[in-house]
Length: 155
Image (cartoon, rainbow, N blue to C red; front, side, top):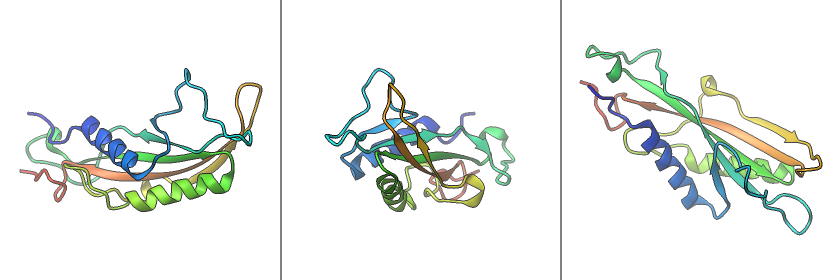
């Protein structure tokens, strides 16, 4: 018996959708170590987006009588805006979150922001000899898999 939802495919669908919403670079997990951070002529980093996906987690409700592979699960994606100043990072993160709330890849519930899935964050990564100062704004969105109403009805 297989799970109804392919988490990796859903993550890829979210990444592909984000890339249609912006012309800025979009990376998964972090900016690649082997690529230079994009810099503007003003010496500050150019804005970019990082998507950090969470693992599959068991839901508190939504157990299936046909076994745990058909139980309801949830996962998350952190929308991270990185820029050379705080206002740009916040604007980037907020704008993407506004566009993504309610987006529904096949097989999951619409993306939503819930208090139990993580609070928004804003922080600064100070410069050193190898990197410029980076302002980071982050918000976590959540989605359910194998649940009722997300494209894969439970038996």
